[in-house]
Image (cartoon, rainbow, N blue to C red; front, side, top):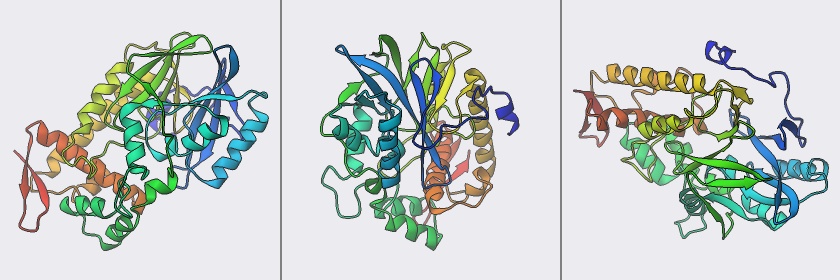
Length: 357
């Protein structure tokens, strides 16, 4: 456990839900854990005991990716953890594959509606290939367009480029379909679950319109990916919005949690439930301030995003991590550029480099 983690409190430090089973973390709130085929090898999902129009059942928050193993684990959950009651609705915090991948399957399986923000629903539909897209370019931070974007920011490693180029269908492979209809979630809205209001809190920077859920009665925050205990939330610039400036949006979004109760139990999408939300927010703010200063110092000479990868990441990156590392490097450069502390230069080789002013 690193020093930052030691400042947090983990009520279930020695416990994990077994595969296909759940663990109660608050009254009517159960924790599921599903596998992921990445270095980040799991996602936390949540079952909320519910009742809608007099019909008892469950609300599911987030779904896992579309893989046979995950569907099989869900079937075990249905058999052993639902007390014979149905899934009444599926809430998705945002459009990343590990959160929305099985939403269509779950909604069809239980004839239940999808609840999601408008922006993330639309992007999930677009990237999944539901909209008309060229072959192999259905969307996501991979494919030919993504490769060109990263090459423009200095990526020259041929192996990394080939992997990015070849994975144009990577997002659709994990999110093969998205429900054709949904219920829109809005910032500040209260969703009633089992008679309790859960306030929606919008977050920007990590996803287009991420929604966290907070129960003031339970003092529980389902934070999605906006607040994680061990790792920093990825904040990236991808080819679909090449001039984006997401890092200030992310940091500003964290302020929305400052007013919540100090003893709030945070239920993150990765890692274990924890208390110490305000401490974790402070850690994230300090982390990014330090990384921005490191990038600023590195840009005493013109530097591309690829040039500053070693400044931000001190480990070997696999192909999955490379796309997000490049995206995050661009995000830090853009934060300094739009703040007027860097100038942007385009070289004769077509690469964008940034230099300290």
